[in-house]
Image: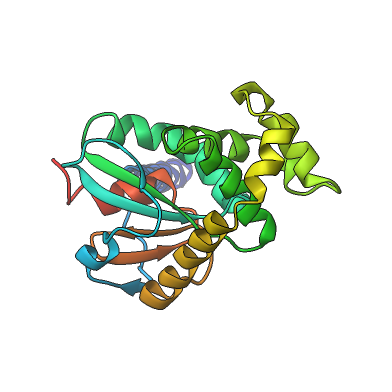
Length: 223
């Protein structure tokens, strides 16, 4: 009887071990499977999306690369998260390799966004993208404080822009009107619900996409 119990116990142990191995194999295969692309919140004609706006495009990457458009707000924490935590790896994998042409478009959710974007543009269209990245990197220092303009001047001091020059820029009503026109066009054409919003291959995605999600979207589109 004792040997029979021992034999049954051995069979049970082997069966449990086999089940655990199968479960582990399934877990590993799921973990390394390609992520499914996120569901878009809308669609559009990509040619329409790429029509020039009232300001020169802020773009980086090869002109022949697959276009990726981001509408972003400088006071949006999710946009800052994307810029700090996802953009560097995305840029390395897709933009620097010529696979993607990345286009950043200003989307102003409030007056402080308008002011910050005016200042970034005032630094020169060739420096605007770098200025926007600097503002994203230091967002908590200027966007959520009592005196944001003073704080912004401090953040932008390394670029050579003085507070006096910044104040002069903020009086540029023509620039403010163009930034507001970008918002209006985005709302009318793409029904922007929040920031960031991405437009890729005619599909509109809401929220800060992860690198895995961007991979899932772009791998079928680029070589």
